[in-house]
Length: 117
Image (cartoon, rainbow, N blue to C red; front, side):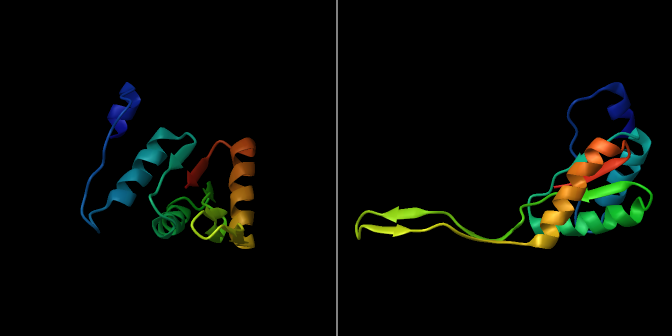
């Protein structure tokens, strides 16, 4: 994967079963690339796991966590059958909001940035 990145290959896919070392492989690619990196996860649970693992793999780097800060979100809605308007409701997690801000700041301040989103 590292050689393909150096060659400028635009697309690569890393597949593997649980526990096969995908995260460790990506950590090695990130270390070899030595450039800002965005790691995208399909859900917040896996993003949190990756964030923790990359923080342990890269204790000197700026590892950021950038996911939705909503613990709960209900968009506004209208039910025409009953002429009912449902107001928007949300609950924001202040800890995640701080982590998002730190991740954004790191992008402007450092080159050794790994953002997990």
